[in-house]
Length: 434
Ligand SMILES: Cc1ncc(COP(=O)(O)O)c(C=O)c1O
Ligand SMILES: N[C@@H](CCCC[NH3+])C(=O)O
Image 1 (cartoon, rainbow, N blue to C red):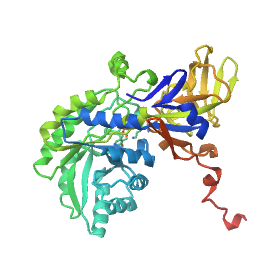
Image 2: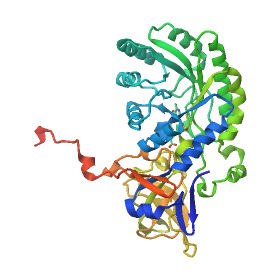
Image 3: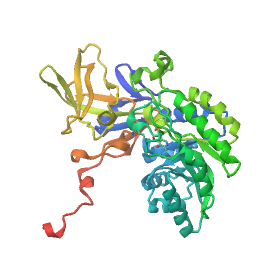
Image 4: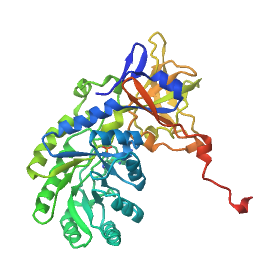
């Protein structure tokens, strides 16, 4: 259940009129609902209720420091993939006792920072990485806790760019080599084995790949338990969310109407399918959801610059571009676009919804039916809370957008819009050019 709906003709987030946010802070601006994030966290916990479960929220989905603080307050740990994410979690005032560090290219500096900050475990993706972690831990005089990320060679049946658990993906140790990798790890003096981990892909809309991969990982964990100190099994993230008609889909009815292949997984169906496989292991269970926790908890507000009437084509030109919300350009992703002020007496138009960037790919939607809108009016991109701001860039020398967090009837600016001065600061002209 998300907390975005029309009250009268105005789109609200919780009890806040989003037009008021756009008015006060301008656009493009991301707006997040604290209540939706809390609901999502609780649904994951309850969905897996039967297990000794800990949520490691995948920071890459939305790394705003206020959002991290919110999840830390709810009891979550974090799934990190860089020193930058680690520093943001510390800046949020959270410890790393329940946090894990993933990624195929951990640098020596990142490993050192994670060890010094008390990371719970590294999720190791190759033998050279293990050697490096052992080396850095030795220099610091500590033992590094590790789990291997296992590549189970399962097709997640998602977009080719978000499949991560097939043999030809760069991620993880092939499952056939796992037992040998653990045996080798046990010989390193500065390494302590803690568990097994996988992550097969993102935006999964079918439960079957989760089940297949979890069965493979659970069998491996069972085998390893006899020889190693296996404390937990981490099943990664990947739970898909609703993008199509997101605004009407607060209730579960929408999911039930969908054909099996496109029906997003619910935490309840996910828990019901995985718990019987995981429970007999008697291990702690980690989950690393990113998108599910924040995706439907955020929107991107944008303003109409122009309605351009082209040759047999309308273009609704916004002040948000692909640099602000990259998903449509990168994955052809669908985001519902709705007016902040709904006016049913207005005619509908069919238009390409585009941004100001000098790229043909700067197109959010092709031939989309939308209420006619003019200069200065506002729209919201639904389901933009995950991989929105975190994938934004300054392309075309545009400033990073603002971020706002709604809590009931109040809202706070949690990240101010970048200024031109800020964007330029730090660069300099070398002497030979002066
Ligand atoms: C290791 C790991 N865990 C968790 C996630 C979060 O995935 P999602 O946002 O699909 O839940 C990712 C990103 O795909 C990941 O690489
Ligand atoms: N960033 C992607 C998904 C990849 C998740 C990280 N491995 C998205 O916007 O949907």
